[in-house]
Length: 178
Image 1: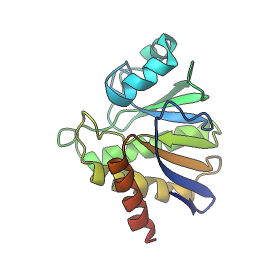
Image 2: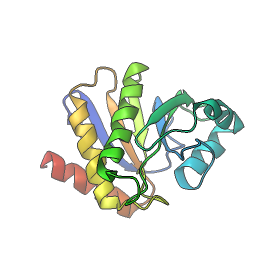
Image 3: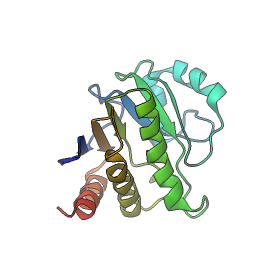
């Protein structure tokens, strides 16, 4: 699914976040210490190589909602933006902290004059955020931010499975009233 909001194209695709060669920065659903973890963080660190963890070390720890940027090392992108999403029901208010992840990642992309960013479904794995609710927060935050973006022209949500992709498509349709 592909729609335009102002000057920004929003896409929802099924795929692997580490295989987005046309994107300037991919977003890592990171842990507080910015180390290799499970899920998205494990895949990104594996694809980027050990240099990524070395670059991350002095930037950690980060708090829920925060974001930091590094080089992408062996990934086909220029940068990785690392966001610590909330643990659902533990880090509160979960919806605000999750929205902060997306907003802070977009702010870093803007500050670095990046044209494109790819997001995974932040916090929906081991952090337990319900995927439908997470999709609504993610899409709403990006749609609201679109008007203020000056450099970012493409935001892609890269979802691992068809069921999650459907939830993000539904959220996009609902928020934009398509």
